[in-house]
Amino acid sequence: MDRRNVISALAAAPAAVMASTAVRADDQQHSHSHTDELDLRCALTCSDCVAHCENCVAACLEALADGMKDMMDCIKICQDCADICRACAASDARGGPMSASIMKLCIESCKRCVAECEKHDHPECQACAKACRACIEACQAE
Image (spheres, rainbow, N blue to C red):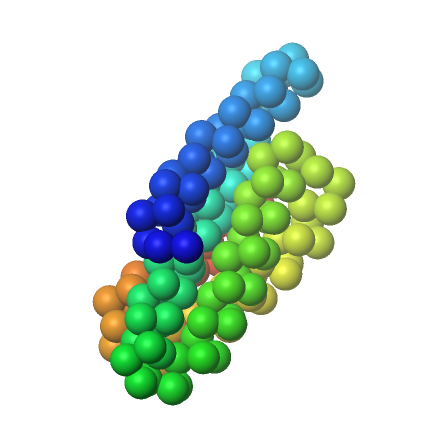
């Protein structure tokens, strides 16, 4: 999958998160509380983190193709982080019963991703680390 396809696919994620949150709010028929705002913040931040992780993976794959063999760990860690953050965003947006457990795993995954991405000078790795730090902060606020 090329970068444009990844970016296009991920561009829809925040809209899906917001739609899911809106449906949940309509179903529960209650006004947004502080907790709802934190849920939405975490879900949107996780979706942003997914986009940055996927972008980092694409850049690392290019670097790997150019002979930089040390990018393999970054690729694997970012792929796992993207998958876990995607699950966290979806579960949190709909108020899933496993949200708290997934969120803990998301925080752990983002911390590992930050540690790996900070080893590399690529702008995509640095942007990924920044997005992961924001995700950690948003998820810990819940």
